[in-house]
Image (cartoon, rainbow, N blue to C red; front, side):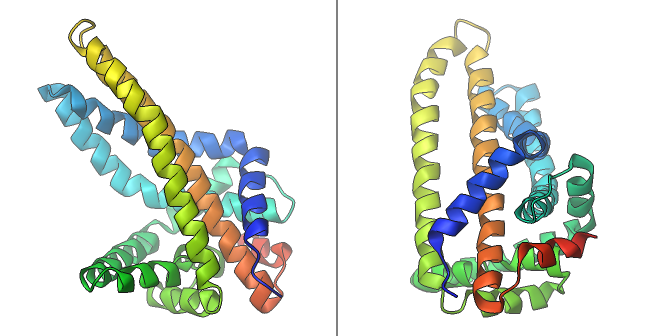
Length: 244
């Protein structure tokens, strides 16, 4: 079977729409709140600067819990079920440390590849794109997750690269469309409303973060599912059985 980009897009936004409440609650709690605190650092006062630091620390921890949680929810949805907040969060907490280790190793590898004329870093990021869902669904070891992702993406990396480019373009457009005009407006509020502009920026930064986080995690889950279906003939029921 062929890896189909259209199927990935359909599954991504279908999972989000059918489980929007749970996905939004998880993303708002684990990504939106830290992003809001980070946004407050723009107010450049001691208390808000401290809030920004706290937000950064929370984000560093919660990001990997959220990845596991949203992947769980997406895979359950692919099988025709409905994501449950508690089950998703439990999966995220269970896989937190391995996902953190995977993220660190991936960042180091991609960073090293970027130094080598950029292209190797891009290749590695595409090759390893489903290492996280492989860990969450198949419970692979940390290093094994990289090998599993390399195996699954082989032969489909150009399509995955195209999806990644589209995602980055959409992310940039959302950020520019939402943040730049509002930032100009907020700058006018800072002096007249005791920092109201910073709160506006913080809220919008949180909303942008929540949106791209949901799309990113559901998208990676959909890529993983489509790769396993096209290469191994595995259906959604088999994937979801990993959480039983």
